Length: 429
Image (cartoon, rainbow, N blue to C red; front, top):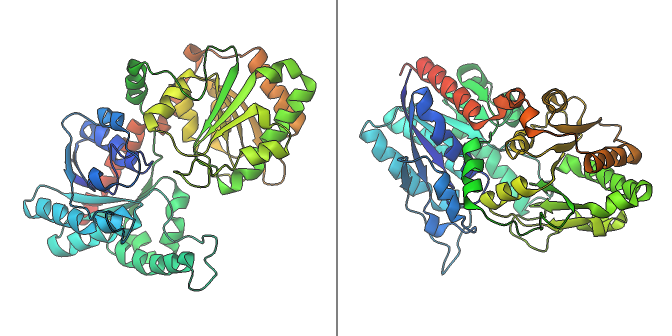
């Protein structure tokens, strides 16, 4: 089956927010699987976050993009969430496509969660089937939600009201992983019975790395020619991953004690790990590193850097650090990203994570397993780091990337296209 799908995303290139990449990557590969995408998004002139202009070079040539009318935040900022500010503009844009019979399906990827009701409204008015893609769970128990009248309490209350209304009648529910939609399906059994449900990771694209290589940028977080061993961790810290971070830092201290010359070469760079994506002072790793006595071995760039800059640093580093969590379902997308950067992986992951066996089978680097009750011992972390730095047993040409192909953006898009086919067939389109 083939068709035309309206991908509604609150952010898109040149936005540097992670959520904007979902629609960008899908829209690149959907035509391969019979679906013509049209992206409907907010107006970049009214995004609050810093732009990354090079991201526009990663957009599929010829892609139709509709930048919907979006309320500004200046001179008066009445509301920040772009999903609220762009809702009416996105609705009108999708409604126009529906009236013109140019679309066969509407898929809204959230966050912003406030765009989610758009799909049901279009379906109610024009009969076009719709779906919602969860990049994060919607109804969540955030810190402070128990304080009645607090911002977190109000956000939770609004979510519990909006989500069941928005998902009712959905033909398709997708998520980054099954756990992202499990709670919603339990609360909405009619949706679980009637909708096609599928999951697929964000995925990484080799084309992104190929473009970054042509830019020939010098990394700004470190000098790859200074003789040091530069390891980089890029991305947010998982709440259930703090204990894993502490285990890694204890391993750094043990490395210094057992092999001071090796430890002197190592510098670990944490990027985007702060308390806020845009706060340059919101350090979360550096204080813990200092408490562990290894503050001089760690650099932290707490706020997010551009996506293109991130890939560039991965291509220039000595190794990629992947820290999982005590939760078994951790999705190891960063591992595939490391393979595309042609750099070895040093990972500490739950023993039940599928990434453990894949890293070992693919010969992509070193992995230390953990459980909810037991972290790797400091001496084991130190031994793994010493072996990696002293004698890196890594050959990018020998890595079996096929083991991680299901984490590619193309595989993710294939899964989406198949789910769209099933959803449209079930909806009688």
